Length: 266
Length: 247
Image: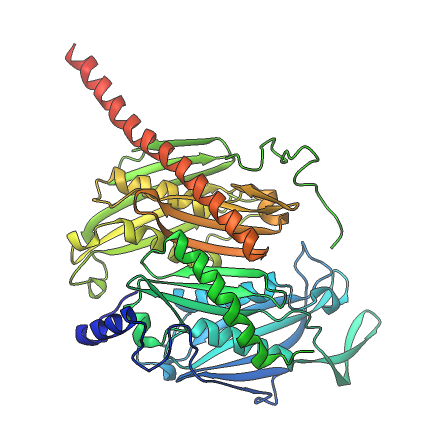
């Protein structure tokens, strides 16, 4: 997806600096930009968070609803993740149905949460086979300055940690909502780490200009026990097998750093 | 989740009789659709997938044309009858994502800069799905591109590996894909030692991932040999037909 929105001179500058282990914004190759996390910022959402990753800004709102389970999983709650590239976030974004990049973003974030079994979906069953809780994770990109995947995954996790589910009782087979809330059964804490490959070097947390220059990126999600729970290569270049193994090592270390920002060590 | 189907038995044999590092039977055919500039067909286990290439041709709509190279477009699509429960023919979010990652696996193989301002349109139709359709889709699409005479750096071979019942296994079938612990699809260009597609879902330790990933690369190398045979087979058949005609 290399576009021509940044000049060749700048592209060369970025690549040359990285060749000597430096970056245009002064970071080391495996450094994240400064990260700020706020939670509980939207009162009407059952859970919410805003993550600033350098100048990238992503909000995640979580809504809970009651609906029908999937027929092949009658005793489990439903998780759905969507991502919206809001046009105010970048001159490149347009209003309209989700494009392939936003579909990919939502699916990669979803995969991390789903495959790590972060939410105990069986606890979200209300009436087996009939009524379950549906958890809607909506990713809202507010400012695009690169590495939307990591920012979104972190915001989703932060939002899940402060998600409340309304209480209910069952009367004559109907669900009635009662006052009061319970915590969402969150049992795992997946985070995503994205690396970009530029001229044979791996860098962590590419910002927008680096994304324009990169050959390919690789996102690796780790659960709280250091297991890999999702991966996604992106970009129209390639990676060597050696780079992929190397990326896993770097990402594992960085994932612990990221998780500690959201989840305090117990 | 209660214990369900056993995926690997006590002798290390899988539900379809394979050993952990064995591929399913693969049948490849090249040049099977008349209208397309290039086409190919794959059967891998019960997977049946067609791929066709049109182009390089004029880009529609025109504003999408790139000044310095061809635009590669890829559509991965599943037929409504390809799975147990009818799939709506409208493209799902899964298909949108797979179309993207398949395109990104093939783009680095093609000399797109040879055809500026044109489009190369690639269509992958899954007629029957049996697990591992994205990998089989890449394998067959790469053959269709070669059949269209596209100048390429290498053929792209793809294969998944994963984990089922604690075993690292190659080329997951439908049940292993659904009930297994993890799935790692990989697309690889052997002569460039380059990976163009890599995804994972499930749970693997970094060590298990490395094992599965290496096994998938091994599978890609075997599939690569089959791809080359399939391409040669088409031209051998033509040669024989010509020789017969001459006699």
